Each structure stands twice: as C-alpha cells, then as structure tokens.
Amino acid sequence: AMLKACSTALGIGPANAMHAAESLYLQGYLSYPRTESTAYPSSMDIGEMLRMQRRHPVWGDYVDDLLPQNWTKPKAGTDMGDHPPITPCRSAGPNDLSGEQYRVYDLVTRHFLATVSPDAVYLQTKVEARAGAERFSVKGKTLVRPGWLGVTQLKYAYDSEDEGEYEDAWEEGEEVGSLPPFNQGDTFPLTPDTLTLAERLTSPPGYLTESELIGLMERHGIGTDASIPTHINNICERNYVRVEQGRRLVPTQLGTVLVQGYYRIDADLVLPLVRSSIEKQCDLIAKGMAQKDDVVSHSLANFQRKFQYFVKNIEMMDTLFEASFSPLTAGGKPWTKCGVTNRYLQLIQARPQRLYNKNTEQVYNLPQGGSFKVYQGQVCPVDGCNFELSLFVIGAGKDQRTYPLCPNCYNNPRPEWGSPPSTKGLMLQCPHADWCPLVTRLTLCEDEETNGRFILDPGSAPNNWRIVSTRSNLIITLPSDIVHKLTVLPDTHPDN
Image (cartoon, rainbow, N blue to C red; front, side, top):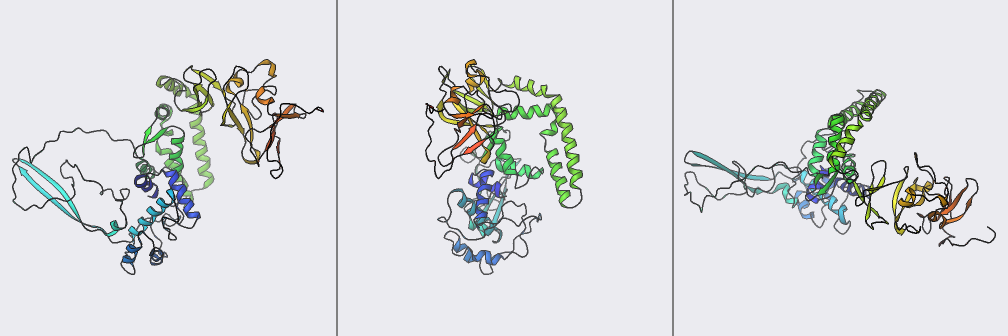
C-alpha cells in the first residue's frame, strides 16, 4: 500500500519511495518498510505510539483529540508472518527531514493515525425522477463526520476506491457530491435551460499507472513489496516503458516489440503464470510444505528447456524486430559525439553493446566484458579522428581498471600501432594497441612481464590515483597522503 500511495498521492516512483522509506528506517523514524503485513500485532502499544505524536506541529492537536480513549481499535488486516505494518517510530517535523523523506514520513504517519481514527460518516442521498416513460436517478453524499479524513488533506485514493471527484457525472446512478434539497413529488420543467443533452463516446482504458501496476503485480503474485520497486525500475531503465504525466507507464516501441517477440516464441516468458508459480513454490518452502532442493531442481530444468527452445527459435524474434523498426534505432541513449557528423552516437545497451549513428546507419562495435562511462568530453588525439572518448571499465571497487576508448580507433586500428587485442569473447585488457596515441599519452613505463605498458588509469582522481597494466589485471594504487597531483609528461627520463 505504501508504494501505491507514494506513486498516486505524492508522485514518487516505487524505487525512490522504497529508498526513502529504508533511509527513514535506518534513522529510526519508521519501522521496517519491506513488509506485506497489514495487521497490527496484539503487542503493539497504540497509545504510546500516539503519545509520541502529541507535540507534532501538524497533527499534534488531532492526536490530542484521539487521546486518551477516543482512538479506535484498528480493523483486522492480514498477518503475512514477516514484519508488522510500516508505522512511525518517533516524531519528526518538517524541519527534521527534507525532500522525499519527509513526504514519505508524512504519508506513513497520517495513514497510521487514520487507521486508529473513527470512521468517516457520509449522508448518502438518491433522487429518482421520471420524464414521460423514462426514469432517471442520481446519487449524492454529504460529509457528516470527517473521522479519519480529518488527519489528512488527501483522499487516500489508493485505499478508498469509492472516494474521488464526482464532478461531471453523467451516467445513471453516479454520485455527484452534495445535492440540492428535494421533496417527494417535486416537479420541474424540462427546458433547454434546465435540461442539457450530452453526447459522448466510450474510450479505451488508459495506460496503467504505477499504482495500478503494483496492484496487478500483487494480485498475480509477481514479486513482493521488497522486489516490486526493482522490477518497475528495471523496465524503466531498460527503456521498455517511459513514465509520463500522472505516473502512467507508456510502453516504448522496444518494449512492445520485445513482448510481442516473446509471445511468438513462448508466451509463458511474459505471462504472469511462471513468476507467480515460482512465488507460490517459495511460499510452500517457507511453510515447510516443499523441499528447497526439489523446487530449485524443477525450476532449473524447466527454464533450461525454455531457454533451449527460445534459442532454437530466435529467428522469430529477429524477424519481428526487423519488421517493426529500423535496426538499432530504439533502445539507445545519446552517448558521445561522432567525429564525422558531430552528432551524438547512441549507446545500444542490449548485448552485444555497440554505438550507433542513426544519421549514417554506421555501427561501432564495443569491447564486451565491462561497462562504459563518458570521458568528460575528451576528444581522440589521433589526427583526423575527432571522436569523443569513452572510458572502458573492467571490474569494480578496489579491482576496477579503466582504459580510454575511441570507437573509431577501436573499429579501425592502424597498422603502425601494433597488433590490437583480440575482439572475440570478453575484453579483460586495454582495448587499444600499446602504440595507439590514446595509450601512449598515458604511458608511464613498460610492463616487462606482459610486454604491455603501465599507464595512468584515466578513471582515477586525486586521493585515489591508480596505475594499471594494459595487458594484465595488475593495479598500483598510489598513497593518497603523499601523491596529490599527477601529470603524465610527454618526455621520458634519459635513463629509460
């Protein structure tokens, strides 16, 4: 419910909402957020939790009205056996937290207060009228006692599907807010001033919002509160969907064609049945009704068969992509400028990664086995090249090595630079030959053991200078308390 609320009421995506909630948990403001339970445990001291909020600058007076005995016992929820529902652990005002963290804290706390507040009471009115042989009806309602609505300016649309705006209701029986007074037997003339005919057309359903997608994922057993934000964030980052106004998820051409391709080969790969089945089997393991080894072996065998079948029929996917859009034009993001057209190349992140110039239809292969970063607008020093450079990153953390990369020189090496490394398989060394100007301008000395070079790691920085070998995974880290500034000179020492 929290993820749906943050998306609907606050406009915060699930991944950012969960990140903010986890930060609040680590700071002691909220309880553990990755929970699916909605039932408060009997041991929870509701009175003490309310007393913590009595001096809050926003809802302190409201809490005073609930204490000591005006709060109500929370309605029964569902205990999933993991953690209690997310609740505030201590009071925090607008000056204690900032940005998304306070907005999430505010929402969670108001929701907690609402769950222990009296019911909201409405007076509902239904008026029936007859014009000739036709019968019409309209409903309206007026708030009598605000109850839990008094703690929030929001309508909590994520929990109260019957709430909402009732303006412009035109279908029979729809509620339109408060109605003017009527008495039985009242008559009124039907004239152009009192009767308006509205001609309308039905429309197809709109795109799913994040909140609606979360609800469908929960209904079909796809993911948990802990994993759902990651799933939604992944399809956004991979350019399968884009988030538009109202937090609606609009499928991209890439995402649509990908799903169509899976449908053509094996619909199970995109339907919720397979993932839901895995989740149910995990629940059986947790309840002691299934053995972990049996579930794992069965799942691996099932997906192995699906993978082999998919590979055997991959041509069906290729055909669909070729027929749907020009190859490589979708799914890329602007990366570095081309030295020929001075336009941005697109980085195609799908394997194998490559750069694509949509103006010339030119594809530049990239080394595989690492990741890529933009090299701060640096331009290739090779005469006549002028391509902007990237950084090719191998490994992570203390084992990370970074090498300069020019897409043009990588794809078109010159003989005078020496033999370049093989482009087959994973690239675990410098992608350029040692005599390429990109490498020589960073060279410090020769690496005699590998017949390579020691170069200044272009991804290193002050307080973290590193020297790396072009042909091995050797890394030399310079002491940060001694070496503060480092410059590679074009000249060599006379003894070298």
